[in-house]
Image 1 (tube, rainbow, N blue to C red):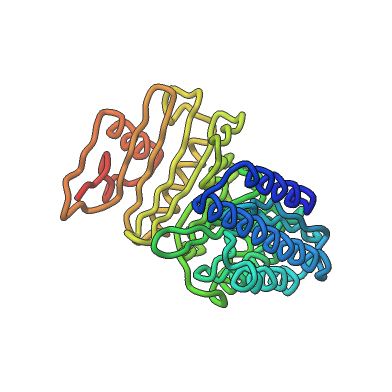
Image 2: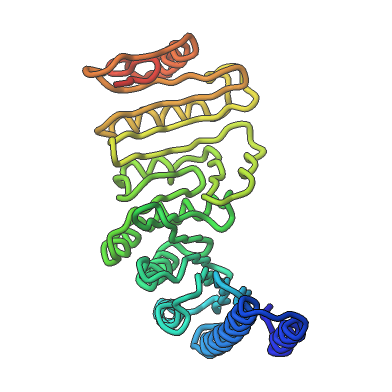
Length: 349
């Protein structure tokens, strides 16, 4: 886990023994530099040990450990803090504050990657002076209180700024999405009290950036019985597998261009109208038409192809469509959704 003092002493002895076999000012300078580097690495290791020991003693902490690479520059370490399942918001923040103090003080040469986690909440962040992660750790804990267990919160660099990514620990845990929708008011309150920062939400069946979608739109996700798909987070090595059900429903909202995408994946059906849940999905499209003020994109993928229908006047763009798009538009019309305002395909600028 860490370089012990005996190993450092052994390394110094090996360098010294080699020095007896060689002569010359150049080597002497290199030898002294190596000794200085090893000695400084030991100082950093002592400081890291002190930080880990101090964090371990904080209220709400179950355990703490570090995987350190402090022998020679560049120096780095991974710090893992296991929090109690019932740790308070203040205790989560106190840990981050303690780490931040060390990261900008005695350990300012060390690139620290930090994971604070419990059975109910995971928070990943770099201890970087420019990131100021402590308020974000507090936000994560407050979101955990608002939504309930199962939340993963990461603070990442999106040059030149920092951004948040919020998802589910279990990528396919739709209970996290349902709880988010049910407690959207508390989530908004937590975000309003936190520092402004770009935030990407990647929950099962639901993704959006920055501000929360309107409650009427969130209800489309919260009320449907159609299975929701898993969602991958940045850094996931593999994309989560789709549920066993033949149909899933997903929703994406982009605040930047005020676009809502509502989608259905059919893994066994030949045509939308033949699929289980099709009527419910058509009802969701009807509700979305009333709830969404901006562009609404309906995207349906089946075994043999897919279709896209866009509700927009397309004043400043040209619609692009194919046979599958026209087929979807007809299927929606057959389901009782007025054709007015919908065009087959995307409306590209």
